[in-house]
Length: 79
Image (cartoon, rainbow, N blue to C red; front, side):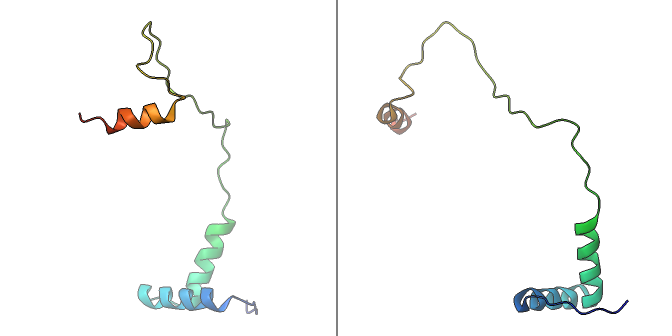
């Protein structure tokens, strides 16, 4: 089907360059882009949940992690 759409000049120029580099037509590039955008996306079965690792122990940290300067000093120490 033939239709007319308005496309930003910069995007059109990029699409034309891409088509030329791929040895295909602008029509094929636009159709592929539309297919990719309109394709159904798999739905996640469960929500992402961040679970950072935790370490349990009886030792107290060597420094107060809320003290930024102490952290900088520790990082600056030669190994």
